[in-house]
Image 1 (tube, rainbow, N blue to C red):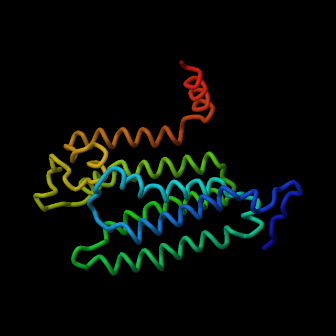
Image 2 (cartoon, rainbow, N blue to C red):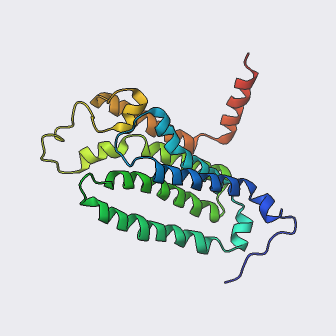
Image 3 (spheres, helix red, strand yellow):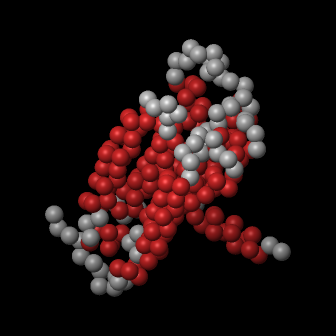
Length: 227
């Protein structure tokens, strides 16, 4: 398989990928802290812990978006990193989920919550390595993490499954399990609050994907000019 030639004007590797290397190292360090030092619990103690747990995702999103595609292709990283992501999913997360699924006080839920951002980053990485733009990479990461945090999965759990347990059917009036919503609202959401919360997040994710960059830049300039 031929290797792409680097353009003559291409910056040296370290300079071209400086942001990626710093953000990637930071993201991995933060991920290690979150996984190894923080408790693996469904309950979220505070908004600050919730935000801290998002930092590895933010750092890795930046690392992927600033990855230099020409250097990546020259180093054949698409043939290395994409299979590596698959192997982490298949040989780390899947065995872990099988192991914890039947344990008392199972970490299954926490493991899935960790898996989803990894899938988002893997998709964004494939997009960037395939020549996707920096802004497009950031849009994809932003929109997909907003969808993860929207509560859409909670609603889908209630709607698409044939529940017979009275705890889940009809749809509960208060969503007492939705910690990721509680930590932001300050209380467990009532059913209709959850619907509004989901709708706002879905609309925001669509906006992140669809609003032209020039409109965002124009709004930013107007805000800076405002007294």
